[in-house]
Length: 514
Ligand code: GAP
Image 1 (tube, rainbow, N blue to C red):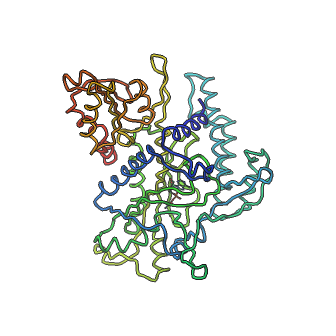
Image 2: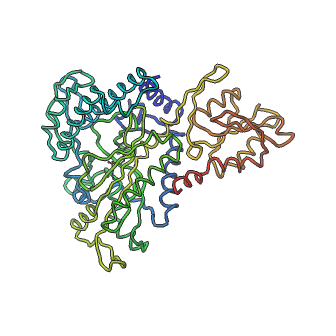
Image 3: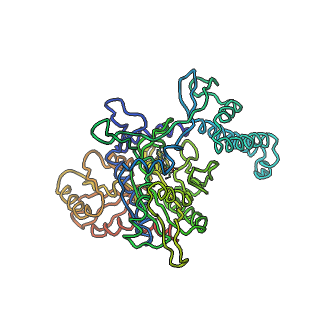
């Protein structure tokens, strides 16, 4: 199965099993907007809890807030979003399709990397056990040729982005001979800038109406509340403010399912530090956030850092945590050193003093900020991509299983009476009554046990508990484990401890803090 086929299957699976539906589907959907279904919302809530607790519970110097989506319009002037929150876009005249110019070039570079990887594979086959990859990469004329071209384009691309040089960006697209994937032609328009913020009117009459924006990031809600939280919480530097909430961007190129949406959710934490210490904190948060991802057990090699070529208008250092999605390594989270840009600008635009009196230094200053910013939806896609597995079983049957980490699984336990009679459903209900205050539990009595197991595998339920006639005699049940499919008999009273051990966030948190 190719990665493309896998991705298509994943999207179909998300719909078939109540994880994600296209928005307003009966009206044919709305571009790049999605709804989360009955299983999706549970997984999403668990992701948010994993993040929230890892920030607010595990760190006594991080607190949370929940700011409004609408903010004073001046906020977005101060933050630079009105002037500079743009994407460079380019149209193909033949297909009439619109693309992000920077994404076209980035995709071209990813293709060159694939070419190099193919050369390496060919050489590995040719030279077998004598193959030395490092030496090959350093000496192969073909690889060196591709690399030299890539490096030259990369240097021009970075300069063009930093200088906002749209003509050069178009020239790079032409020089790389990038074609439109639909029309196959190079009939490109000029590159133009496009502001990504959605706006609407606040107020009852058009005359008195104010243009307000749907926030494109949650971070500004934290910055404008910095003083409120610092004062009321008597917070001392360094300290952080965390928030989870919706953000909106009028993305030009909305593709790859929930990877790039127009309405999405962010989990952001702004960490306020003494000026001059920001690089140390930036490195620390890079490490902590990578540990948070890796604790899920999807394989360390599936993550990497990618430093930004073009720094956002507010940053002096920035990196992305990238995950190996079915469509390649892509950004899941950004870790940015935002200097005192935001607080400084809000101080300037609002006329209010936004400073911290540092008792150690005996002076007041605008704190610096290190931000960690992750999309809930991208995290969701990461988990689904890593968890989706098709397996051929020993008996020749096939199963689709979502190997979602137990702590994040939408349903923790499915309780099933073997038959719908002889008092077995009643015992199953009693077990559910015992567990339902702590965990999401499902009851299923329809179809054969095998079919019921398959249904639970497909939504990632870690445990299936079967009540049978032996249960009535000795108070034991069969527990079937999702990943190994192994079955064991345990006492009903031992169920809670077993489930608790497996589904608790504790083990994940220990890995982050280690
Ligand atoms: N406050 C900084 C900020 O917003 P960003 O790199 O633009 O930085 C942070 O966004 C994260 O938000 C990304 O790493 C991604 O996970 C998520 N994100 C951004 N745009 C998105 C979109 N259109 N759809 C889904 N998630 C998005």
